Amino acid sequence: KVIVSGIGKSGHIGKKIAATLASTGTPAFFVHPAEALHGDLGMIESRDVMLFISYSGGAKELDLIIPRLEDKSVALLAMTGKPHSPLGRAAKAVLDISVEREACPMHLAPTSSTVNTLMMGDALAMAVMQARGFNEEDFARSHPAGALGARLLNNVHHLMRQGDAIPQVMLATSVMDAMLELSRTGLGLVAVCDEQHVVKGVFTDGDLRRWLVGGGALTTPVSEAMTPNGITLQAQSRAIDAKELLMKRKITAAPVVDENGKLTGAINLQDFYQAGII
Image (cartoon, rainbow, N blue to C red; front, side):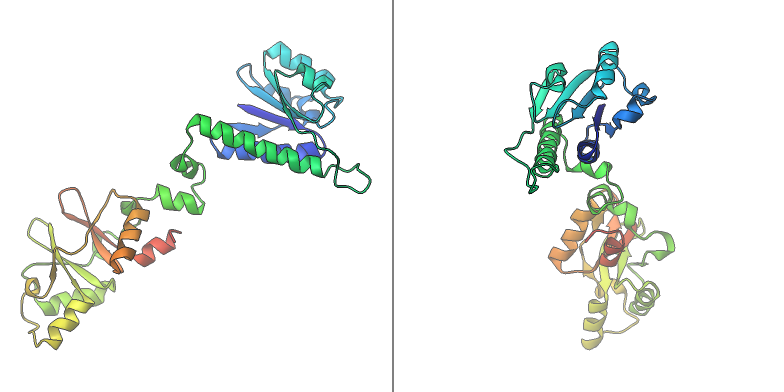
């Protein structure tokens, strides 16, 4: 783990750096130096790394923290504007965050230095992320409630309608009964299956209109009015890929099938939107 610590404005920046590290694949958390000296040093193990942030490099808490880290064989890294300070000398590696001057009119309040610290901390987190081979799917796993998590973690079978909510008829079903099934589910299509429940086509609102305008009889088997070999989606495919396919083909819904082409569900664009896949 990476334990980030710092006091004052450095501490506020440190909390953000720890959060960025954690969300990009590096286990990390922030410990306040005062709390570390009153029990929280127990959180730190020998295989951990402490990243201490102090622009001056002379925070008094370091006098007590550094010996304890040495006792535990914990590697100390420093972010400081004074590489030759006590912190810089004690650290195994130093990230120089020095600035020419603060933006404060009195050149006193941490302003430019805090921005520089945050920037360097983000750069460090990105470098570590790249070294770990952390990718979009890894990011999604640590952000399951976010938009990216919804896009990358959901498969079609997570979102599809199942059981009685699946609009389906057999090849020999009449156009009239297929029309009733269309109305029952309101999905805009009906999957037309053979006796093994393999999808052979789809019967849509558009198919019904074309059939009636062309003078087709409602007693005719739906197999004569359907669109054969219509678009189907694989249950195990990524939801985002399925949604983009529907958008590309300019259709609003599709049956969902397994690897053998058997009907397992149905889905429409609204199901994707409700799951946060925009």
